Amino acid sequence: MATVRERARARLPALPSRWAELPLALVLGALAVGIAGLVSVRQFAGAASVSEQISRLERQKVELQARNNELEAQLSYLASLPRIEQEARSRLGMVRPQEFIYVPVEAGGPPEPKLPDRYWPQEEPAPPPASQPWWHRLLSWLPLP
Image (cartoon, rainbow, N blue to C red; front, side):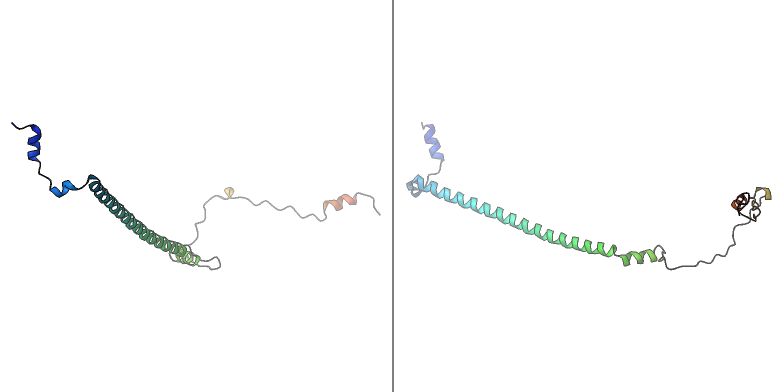
């Protein structure tokens, strides 16, 4: 009857004889070099990804700066005085203060109010003009030469 260990060895494939002869330190060294190579490749791939993202963001920044410059130019055009005057004249019908526009009116004025004379304000009669000022009359009472 075979033992459990013998059965387990029977199931495992046998290693080639040249692998069995290699020292353990050499195998571990090769494994370490392989892992270091994979880590460096992974870091390089990450750096390339970050570099691509940086270049994409720089392109986006340039596009946004160009759009910002366009909007500033449009703002300066819209805020210019000649353009505002032109819009005021064309859309709002405004004119400069020195210019006069005469609009003929066909209709007459408002109708005369129909109130009795007693409700209209009465003009007060002007006082009769005095022949002399009051101070002349006052001085005439004094005995002066």
